[in-house]
Image 1 (tube, rainbow, N blue to C red):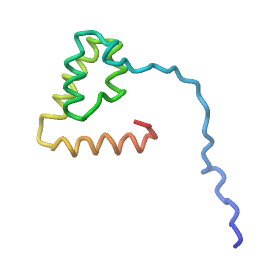
Image 2 (image 1 turned 30 degrees about the vertical axis):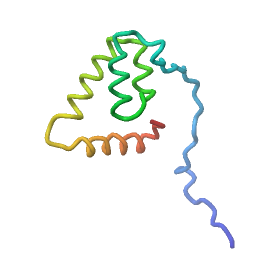
Image 3 (image 1 turned 180 degrees about the vertical axis):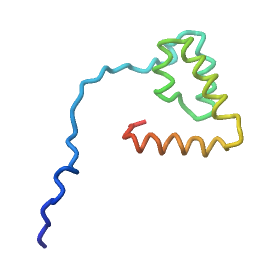
Length: 99
């Protein structure tokens, strides 16, 4: 079978390589005492602490404020939480996010 030549080379995306910093998640045993309750609640609710939250534990006040904001967005309003999560997931996929 013969392959067709790409007649639209301008549509080929060249992927650039970037160096990025790596920020490791904070395990509960190394986390500030003030965020242990957050870790416990996440573990109870979904079975683990997602890296997204564990990385924020480097700044405990930031994590506590984010959890309050996230809870207000997810758990309140007229749109069911599962549809909000699907919207976040679709947005991540469209933007090529790994998380």
